[in-house]
Length: 138
Image (spheres, rainbow, N blue to C red):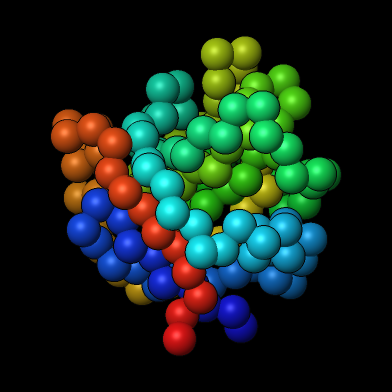
């Protein structure tokens, strides 16, 4: 099981890659590591934060995709009718954009620190963009 260390907005989390359910997405995501970016609050999806990637593309098809990520689940939307992005649900989330409902590939799940996730989401909502780093654990 591949574990990743996630630091976001001053909080630490441990995540597990969903390599059995989304092997190609996980392999592609590993090429982005170490990831160093900013989280902003979602516009249409509810209780979530995201990293927009605009017109970038990762050459991914749908794999283990959902429109309703659970708390602690990361999705990659590979782009298409909306911009490419990574979204993290911190509560109730219905993944969508200005063009309507989207589905993203669930590839990473927080397995430690989930009790701090709502605090992170509220911090992003009320204080603005927060730094996020994701790297291999170890």
